[in-house]
Image 1 (cartoon, helix red, strand yellow):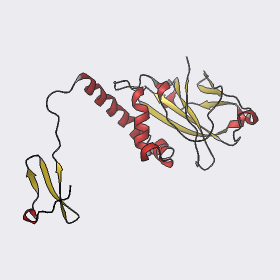
Image 2 (cartoon, rainbow, N blue to C red):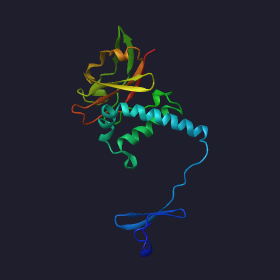
Image 3 (cartoon, rainbow, N blue to C red):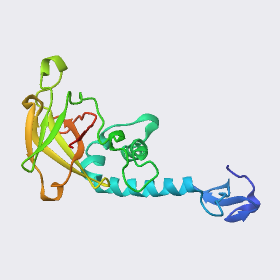
Image 4 (cartoon, rainbow, N blue to C red):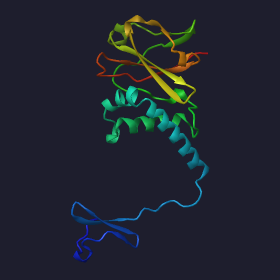
Length: 206
């Protein structure tokens, strides 16, 4: 709150539970924060653990997902892309430091139609992806580009932007050495020029 007492002009500090300070040449006061004392509850400790793990995961895709995909959209309540990504994906950790429910994750959002009837498999060190390529029935753009996200050890996301398009329906992707043992991940579509994206779809290989 703004203060009008000239006797306090130039003062900055504490008076009781009020913090007095100067803001844009005006004296203002706010209630002193009530910091938590004592040990954290088990629930709070779990939340901190999962939040730190999610922060680490998000920092690894700052350019490939957060800035590229999420920062292109204004979300509910004016949240920025990073905040919305964190909000949506915290539930997948379920209070632990590793992803417990990857099927609950959302690694991409946008207006493009998501993939239909996705099937995933592995063959000779390659990831094989098959989907419904009936473009007319699905009302989609044949030139949307495939993006593959590998979930590594349930704690890291590696994003691969490919040149494969929706109309192909079946592709085989050489796995990078670091992804040789990966058996799950996500895919999403991006328009040419990265102007629009689709929601992500989870895939797994037994």
